[in-house]
Length: 266
Image (cartoon, helix red, strand yellow):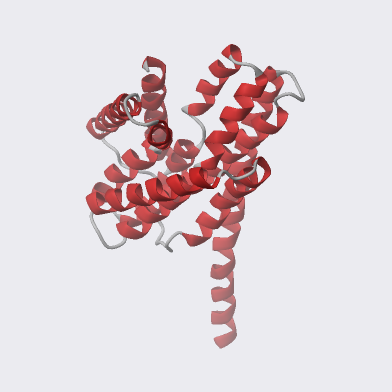
């Protein structure tokens, strides 16, 4: 528990510092990457057999589409409602879809394919937004509140999962903590555009999250655990960067088309 609480606090801290320096989108991308479960999987590899670690990686992938739905629910609600309504709607959507996915018991290949496809589809389904500020003015007091709130939420989830039935415990442990905390602070202070940028970055990071666990699941048993772990982190970073480049080109294309149309009209 102490390890996970420390990793949760560190993830929120790094994400917020990145947002202050590079903007909300970059902060969201870092939050979406496996900053918490990635190091935990490193310890799992030291304690468990490769087959057991591979099974854990696959189980983690099953609930990833529910996390994408959580992000979409918060992003769309943030365009009309306050953060409390968005938070409630996002978590109801997550728990509902997560329970359905666990009941489906998808084959491993299908689970990996759906996990990789979900972030790309989620990027297309996010609401269109105005450009958010290039940097985020986040005071130190808010930074501290974010870290404390994230660690408190993580503690509550882990304590609740310990007494809940097995299926519900798995869903509770899969709840995106940074995906809950960061937009709740971003929306009231920085507005809907900044929240949309944050969540778009979060989805990019989740593609890295999916790539990490797909690569780990596929590589374990075929190469040494240390090599599989390193390959998983490389896949996560490359996937997040690739999706960021694609979304940037997609946003520039309509702008170029509008400029060309204006020139022709003139």
